[in-house]
Length: 587
DNA sequence: GCCGTTTTCGGCCCGACTGTTTTCAGTCG
Image (cartoon, rainbow, N blue to C red; front, side):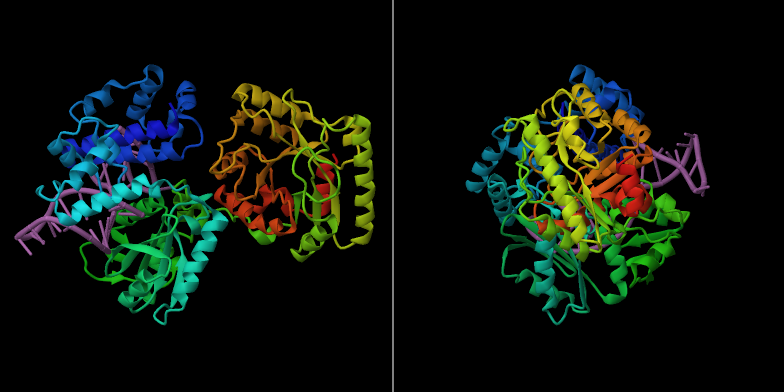
């Protein structure tokens, strides 16, 4: 069973409890939903964790759920879950995917109209709605019926299934919206918050916060956005619109005096906010997006500034990238948060594909080494490493490959002479073949300072074989960096499995680095593995994998991943001076 | 059902918006 399937099953148990008796099972419902969310977000397979008896690694999975999940992995079913769900008609579950339908409404519809087939229930409901039968139901009306019809329509169109946006795309969209909003005279300040501010690898909705003394004018202006398909909802202080492409944009407005509270609230994450509010409760306070109230008092203390809000709770300000409730609040209370790496700490990039005619096995870069060096100087880098793909094996003899790399070495020495302001490092991105050997011979590798190694073919190997392959490839003395270590492509493919414990232990003892590939569709290592790597004492590099000069600006996204993985400057090789780098790479 | 720098028992975030109500339930973030 996959993680999404398991998460879905837990959600169904929570739904069943809600229908049975929401008040009685209130906290079980929360617990099941929380565990479901955690499993959805987990990058390790629950089936693996169950086999390794390590389910407690998932936050929100306690003794009971550990036992149930073990049973699920072993037997494919859980007696307790079946008991809970035995009186719940299975046809309600597909309806929960339709926005505006929750457990209560879905149950009433399924019960009243006697829907029994989960496969056809959405079509069945549509038919009933078209026959004008929902409007007659108590608690429903003409409007609900129309809403349900539209929701089914949009669901069938895949509006809710649109893949999550990669960061640059979401940023651009948010910029267009903030530009639009800034043209309103009523808008004092506007920021994009939510997962975009936390720099998550993919973004679902765009969340915007506006400081204004005139909320209704701002909301009118917002809902008249020229590219809005329709207004989803609109109240006194917030509104949502649907834009073309099926994206939701949510906007909240607060007066400037309370804007800090709104920034905090709307940045999230949900888990971080809940923990913060629980912390406030323990101090006899109540926290919301409006400010902080003393318990049983009406008066609310507003915060214009986010930092002051955190301080009122006895916390240092927490960088948005780590607001995920994974220990940041505890450390902030002791003022012990690490100082996260910043873009300005970066002194170079090791993964640059130039247009040097090396006749590579994979795609070649578009711009010359000179153009890319000039860009590196603009970025204030101290050094730049060229890492074209190795010459294709199938099209060359070994002798030809050695000759190509010889010529490249000469050329790099030549441009080094002409570019005294920056150090040029001669690297390569060498394929690790299925048998673990590197794609080119030791004679050819001799022409390099060091090499990145990576997997580009035969991705379907199992975890054990792939780990063996990667470890063998990295064992070569010239191999220093494992590039895009998981091989995932965001929204395209999940990447292969590796035994990370083994990889980390190897990197640490052999002084090899893992790459954080900054390319927005890679962001590989993923943030959670970055954090585990650092905790295991592994050093990392952040590279852009640029195939043209414009790509070199993508470094910021790699830094975001590093920050989300709690990396400090010390954890990242390419924050260090050239002499240190050179010594490491050529050791 | 989970969890612990006031707790292994006794807590568990807070509010907006909508539609169908005439004071609120359901859904969502």
